[in-house]
Each structure stands twice: as structure tokens, then as C-alpha cells.
Length: 80
Ligand SMILES: [Zn+2]
Image (cartoon, rainbow, N blue to C red; front, side, top):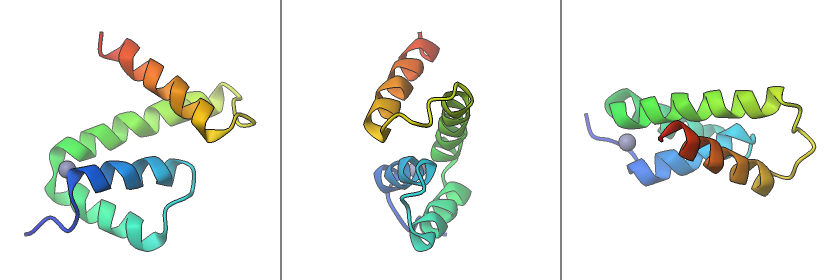
């Protein structure tokens, strides 16, 4: 099966989906991509967990750029 979108696009949609900014069509393409691409599937799971942590930490009022910055920092901590 051919991958419908690139890894880059899948990652982008994944980020948008976290903030409910992705369309249903984009999310569908992302899911299709995740079926064939294991790397993105794992990455998306990690991403989802981070977002959960951030949301639980009651940072809901923060603008998405701030949340993104925190997420990047958490990523760096996790990859250490
Ligand atoms: Zn991929």
C-alpha cells in the first residue's frame, strides 16, 4: 500500500490534531499514514502522551505556541 502523505505532513497533522486544528480529512490521511508507517505511529503516541501531561497540568489557558514550547522541552528531556 502506498503512503498517502509524507512523514512530515503526518507529523504536522498530528500536531494540529492535538489542538483540534486539523480537518477530518487530514486526520483520515494521517491515520492511513500511521497504518503503513510505524515510525510516525510511535511518534504520534509519544506526542499524545505529552499533550495529555500538559493538559493535566492545567495549562489549558496557555496559547498553543507556549504549549508547543513546553512540549519541545519535554521532548528534549525525554530523549536525554
Ligand atoms: Zn511516517
